[in-house]
Image (cartoon, rainbow, N blue to C red; front, side):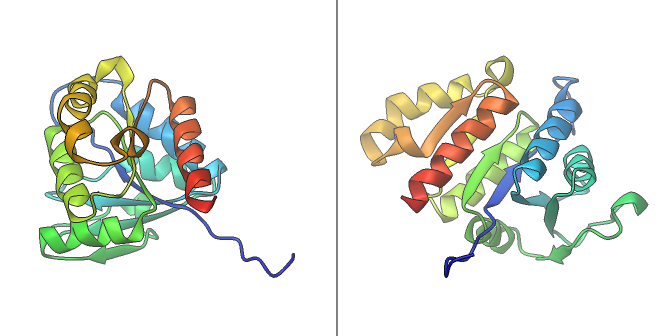
Length: 184
């Protein structure tokens, strides 16, 4: 290899299967976890208030991927995830800021209000961080409209930094495009 050093992209991912809603969330998490692992992406996710995206972590690790967890003090990993690296960051704002600082891009899967709130708090600490939403069944259509109506007037480059994908494969295409833009 020439003098260039390979770097592993780090994706901060927001996913939750807690609360009412779409029953296919766990399946989407598994599909996304496997895809990102096969593409050599390191994932960082949150574990807060006893909510942990177990299907995402399990699938990514089974496919040979790396997952790190930033957790509050309530974290209790299931035995199947005993070897997952966990950093306990008790303060919520500090945990979200650390996730933003560690991540190159933020990815959001359809989930609960808790994961949407965590995304907003994380993005607020680093608003220049690109975000890719998996807009499955139009889950984030309201945010797409908000971005066009409000952010377009206040956030330079919003249309580049906020991407919406309809499938998990399209999610990877958007993430990959953003990664290439950062290295160009």
